[in-house]
Length: 129
Ligand SMILES: [Zn+2]
Image (cartoon, rainbow, N blue to C red; front, side, top):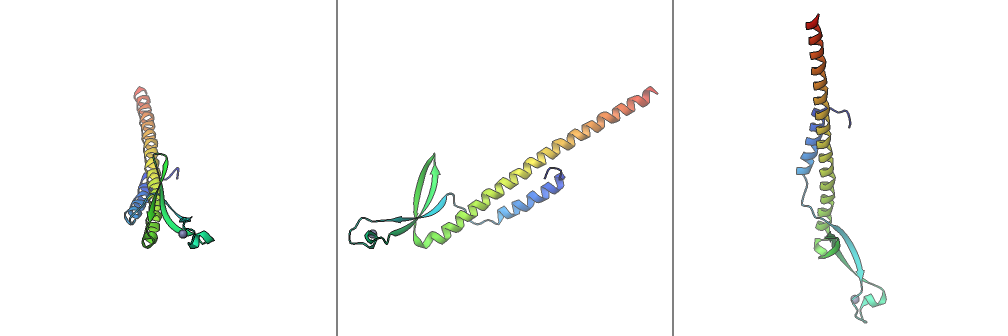
């Protein structure tokens, strides 16, 4: 990506921004299924057939917080978490392109200044002759 022109970099960045606009709802965190026992001695879980519950885990100020996800919302919640991963990937890619555009801009500006210096040297030599 080092020597791409600013124009090409901007085109690629625009394509990523377009993908960003096509994203669905996002949800931060990760979804895990827990196997639990309820403590009742006559329940199936006491015989090894544990209950399952799905939770959204998320770190808040360094602590992991869990949120229960009702069974009929699990599919949606998983989709939103997937979209969030895409969002984070796109965000990084767009930022990388922006950084690259800045670098190329600085590079081309320096090259122009070098050219100007060279030209003025040529001119001043001509004037002396
Ligand atoms: Zn139970």
